[in-house]
Image (cartoon, rainbow, N blue to C red; front, side):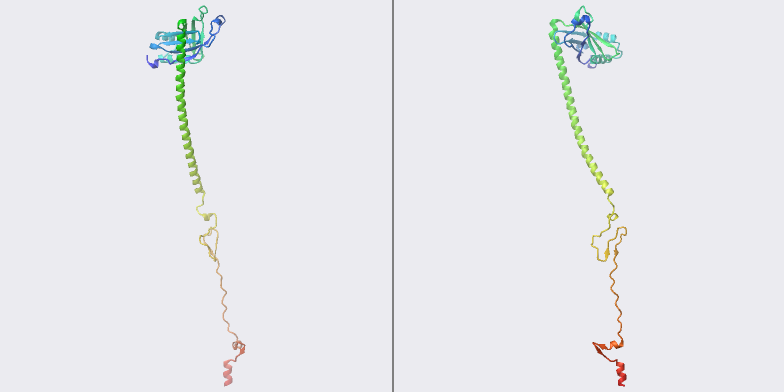
Length: 266
């Protein structure tokens, strides 16, 4: 039988079913069970209180097919094994003592996958006293091996989670750096977009060359410096000739007109 047609080992607790006439037969300690594929595809089931009680059975292929018929699970063989595994792993497993006269020598392991679904019933026989220690020892070692295997799986999964968390933290750090760079670029773009194309659109234009005394600064809307009107020099007064009588005066002396002197000479 291939591995796909073998059922994985299942550990669990089988809770004893209490009744008035079997109260003395019930185990005083919790009962654990183990179900796993055995040689040649058979199923071995062991239930024990790990102290003084143990029950077991082995179902070959014919016994498993009879169990499949009793449960009424149609479909392939793998479907039945999946149902068997799910029922034993459901947590709804009981240990019944149907024969009060025989005491705890024969018990039934009853498992239900879910309420309303068919239940599995597997009969177990009590382990002889000569074999009890070996059965309990094998059960304990198998339980430890199962624990160690699950611990290794959990450790590997934890390592994978740790690696994923580190990778996630690294990617998050890269994203934060990229986000800051994008914000910086966005800020520069906004700054360039809001910056005026011409400074003169907002403030009066100031020439880099100091203005001369005959210029003034005007608002940018005019764009053309207006020259101050030059100082107009006072108009030169036309030279007026002094009266004849005054022309004759030179430095306080009164001179006679030449024409008058000529007349006198004549």
